[in-house]
Each structure stands twice: as C-alpha cells, then as structure tokens.
Image (cartoon, protein in one colour):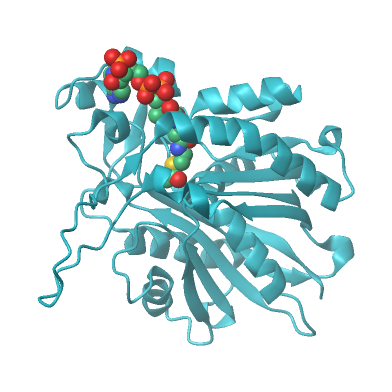
Length: 325
Ligand code: ACO
C-alpha cells in the first residue's frame, strides 16, 4: 500500500445557531457589515459541547457509516487549535470515548491549515504492507478563545467538527495525488490565541500578551490572496495535473471575499469554488472537512472527482492537498 482512500466522511456542529442580528444585540456590529465583509450569515456556537464531544460524535458516525468497529482503527488524528486541555489531547479523549484500543492518537496544531497538514501526515502513516485505517478529524470550539467584546474577531468564527475515515490503498485506487505545505513562522504574531500566562512565583516577567484570539485581519487577507494561488499551483504540479483538471476547490472558509479574489486571479469559475461560510462562519481546522462532507452528502462531489483542498491561517501556515475522491 502506498496511498489511501477516503472511505467515509462525517460532521457534527453545536445545536445552537447564532445569527448576525443576535451578535448585533451584544456588540456594535450589523448584519449588513458582516455579510458584506465576510459572507457570514450565522454560525453554530457551543453551549455544553466541547471540541472532544464534537470530535467523538464525528468518530462514531465515521465508524457507523463505514460499518467497522473501533478496534479496526490504527490512528486517530485530530487537527485543532482549541482543545479541551493541552493534555490529554483531543484525539486521546476521542480514542477513549469510542474505545479504539488498537489506535495511537495525537493532535496536530496548524490552525486553519490543520486538516490539510493532517492529510499529509496520514498519507505517510497509512503506507506499508498491511491495510491500516485512520480517523482524521478537524474540530474546534473557537468560541472559547474569542474575546466577545472584540467585534473585529467575534463575528468571524464558529464551532464544529468534521472528518474522514482514511484506509490504505494501492496507488491506482488511491486518493492522494500531490501536495504543498508551507509555514511562515516569522509572520506568526499576526494571529495569536490561547497564550498561557506566566504565573510562576519565581518570575518577575510582566506578561502583557492577551490570552484571547487576536488577528491582524488585513495582513492575513493579503497573505492569503498572495500565497493560495502559489500553493495550489505547486500542489497541482506535484500531482502532475493542471488547474483545469481540478473539478472542485475546497477552500478554507475564512472569508468569502478571499475565495472570490483567488478564483478571479486564477480564472476559476465560481461553481468550482463551493462555499458554506454563510452557514458556519470560520471553523478553522473543521472548515474544509465540513465543506467536503456536505458536498459529498449532497452528491455534488462524486467518486472520481479531482479536488484541491487548501487551508491557510495561524502559524502562519498554508497547504494544499490534491485528492482524487
Ligand atoms: N462590525 C462593524 N464594523 C466593524 C466590525 C464589525 N464586526 N469589525 C471591524 N469593523 C470596522 C473597523 O473598526 C473599521 O472601522 P474604521 O474604518 O472606522 O476604522 C472598519 O470596520 C474596517 O475594518 P477592517 O478590519 O479594515 O475591515 P476589512 O475589510 O479588512 O475586513 C476582515 C476585516 C473580515 C477580518 C478581513 O480583513 C479578513 O477576512 N481577513 C482575513 C482573516 C482570515 O482569513 N483569517 C484566517 C485565519 S483564521 C485562523 O487561522 C484561525
């Protein structure tokens, strides 16, 4: 086995839906501003759900859809930047919750690129001389990291989880075709969240870094529109494909304007760039699998379609996986 196939997809979002008008009741914003600048109409925000409970729901659905048991899983990988704890990892909690006794579990933090980075890791793990299976899940409750008094970030994000069951496959039937993943650590301070405050009694440091989500939105916007086309072109080249061969571009849903900007620059028609940010907001590592699951369940994406999955965000990170569904 030198490749993997996508055997199942699933998603889980909190029950509670918060509209733009509801946000306008607690902060100085409006439905008009949010829709015009981002394309977001509503988002799911957790009540009692956590990243681990949402990811566990996704894991159970993946097992059920594929008709396999938890014992059949070799790896559980969760991409998240909003875990319940720093330890145990969300993936270890999922492993315990579903009883996947034979699975090694670990988290990946590459912010909104986490799912794409996870596919790259899973590709290497599933190679070998025996059939192996991995649950790859992106899950977030970013609502826990947000400063709900900061209108410039609070309106953008939503909670949710989604993922795929990946199975080893031979290259002829395999999904993975090529990739490009890249990190720009020197730009990392443009997007920070979850700073751990120094409370040790022996330190004289005065810690001024906010623990909340902080972002230089304009800087990330220009980073995204400059680097996404390069990433897609490199990944397509790695896959021996051209942009014209790709049926659908499954973009990280951070801002509808970013997607439209990139599509225009790359001369890709809008119907090849599906969008669901209107329903879910920016769900970071959950965003691409959430869209992928929706498109597969709606039968818009069919077996044999060539997909480009592109993530970008905190790190700063960016990545594209070319996948044959
Ligand atoms: N409601 C009303 N007005 C607002 C709001 C709001 N929610 N937020 C900001 N404003 C105001 C600002 O104060 C500013 O007012 P001023 O002109 O009087 O100063 C004005 O609106 C414009 O603000 P900008 O920040 O310049 O607006 P912009 O058009 O750049 O849109 C946005 C902001 C949506 C954040 C955009 O920059 C963006 O999408 N950036 C990319 C973010 C991204 O992709 N992040 C991905 C990574 S996320 C991750 O990794 C987890």
